[in-house]
Image 1: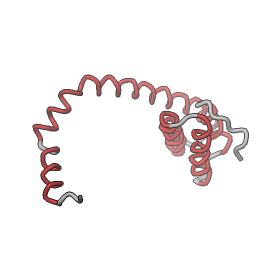
Image 2 (image 1 turned 180 degrees about the vertical axis):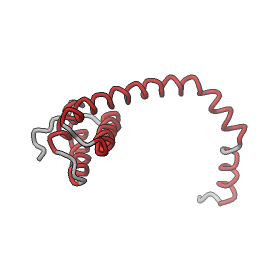
Image 3 (image 1 turned 90 degrees about the horizontal axis):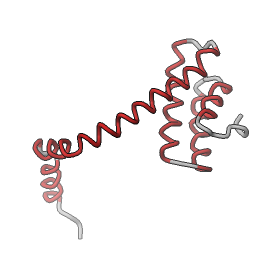
Image 4 (image 1 turned 45 degrees about the horizontal axis):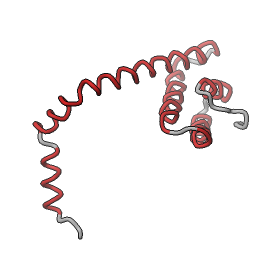
Length: 122
């Protein structure tokens, strides 16, 4: 049976009620802060790692955010995938940033910092 539109609207309105949303956030705030604190620390380490790879190569400062974005994408993928799937997804991201003009050797170095095998990448 297909649910009528009015039912869906009522359910949606109930979920976005300010009191309901506040109650959910209040109940989960401690856990949310704990989890994001760890993620923020991970992102800081990631950015330091990427910068330590990029800066000695003499990359113009205007391009550094692009390498950071590549690293962030790999970080996101490494949280979702492992093994061959991670390798394949990382290769797609590598190809995208390579096509945007970033240096292949630097991209490979960043990927290797994530433990990704880049020996077959060109």
